[in-house]
Image (cartoon, rainbow, N blue to C red):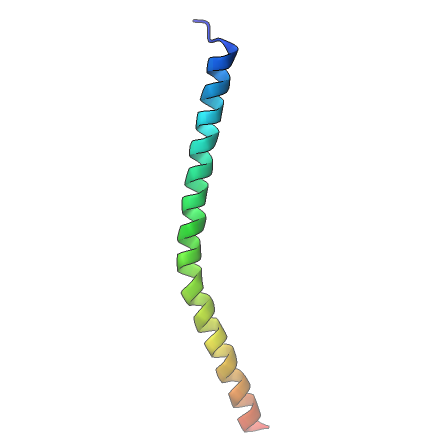
Length: 56
């Protein structure tokens, strides 16, 4: 079975694009998960600062 170079190149580009699309979806999903976590961490840091000032 012989695969010409252009078919091989097209296949590689297609696989690469699918991989990139999947990577983008994972990154977007992680962003949706991490945003609320970072908001909570920021709120905790503010509370810690208030406690430190209160105990100073």
